Image (tube, rainbow, N blue to C red; front, top):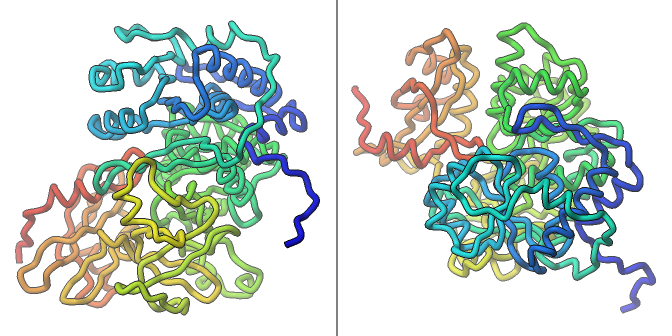
Length: 539
């Protein structure tokens, strides 16, 4: 084979911040800090501090491949650490502080972290767990805090002690760059170890038009936490594209986001549906409107039709994105194609509510229970598998989980049930573990949830299976009420009956004060199944 005569520079994460510092030097990174005040500086200044942080890491003895943990909010310091840690060949291991104590302890010990950069907010958590964490774990505080923990010192002091005369090293692009763990909703958390190559390819794919596209004329606010799947690649895509970054810090309520969006001219936001629901409720209840926001990307769970319509009415395009920790995370987006622009509004809405079509680099297929590939006709349903250069080929130090999830030819079992149409658009019908099997037929919990969300009195909805002596399983609908409302059983069932046959309707509707959520904002159905394990319908 004739080899091309092109440069062979490795794809490394350090390329992003170096590019931003050279070509978008005066573009801002703005952060609401944990301490309260707004912090702002430029990409040029961010790279200088990242180089200082990299030298501090080396002085602390961090070596290539060492896992360096962070437990922090979305701020400029966390951004610097993303680039400083990976930039020297170490592994940036972001830890979700909202997980259970048991899961956090497991993750620290499984990853064998050498160092932890700790936000003051989470000091009490680590004080409580410290006896169970690795004995040789050293801790650096990102902000001042009174603590009983033995620490190396303050991050700002470490950075101030170094100079910025430092060249980012070159090494194999297949070296590990970051480590994220799944939220462990089924079994123990599993580690997904990203490489520099996969991270850069994913960032390039995410930057494409129709994906999470952003330009040097945009202002992006990643509400999705940096401790969750690398904030959907924004620490890389924003500097890669010269985009102004606006970090919300710990204040994610509707009022705080609105204030920040308007003050900084945010054009694009990224977050889970719960964030956008709360933000919309704030705008509606306070008679506010956004003046610069042109689009929001929503992922993590299905978008309710009513929410997409609410943002559409404000002139904001809501883009449905789908992926997983194992996918870095982006897999698909529900962007329309040229031919769809000729369709009526209802047909366009139907397409926009799918999980979308694959970004270049992501392959998809569905299979039956025997592993046979099924047609992409938009009707046939099967288990969804994915494959690509930024999709995991193995879980970190977990052969058993890898064996269950990854085929020898690289196909990864997502655990989702879906159909795929001829244009590649995926429609998830459920998780394998969440689908309701009633009398031999499948009932989609996602479809019921989205339909229930259209009720004017429903804030959130979740559907789980409860046991039934005749049908095996039946759906139970659990909802929370919007402020000042108390949705009734009969009203909700009547609404659902307009779309679903009688046998698919929930056997009961229960109104709760709140639904349990994972640390990433998803409804924790495993907890709901525990809560309602013995629930009996009064009929």
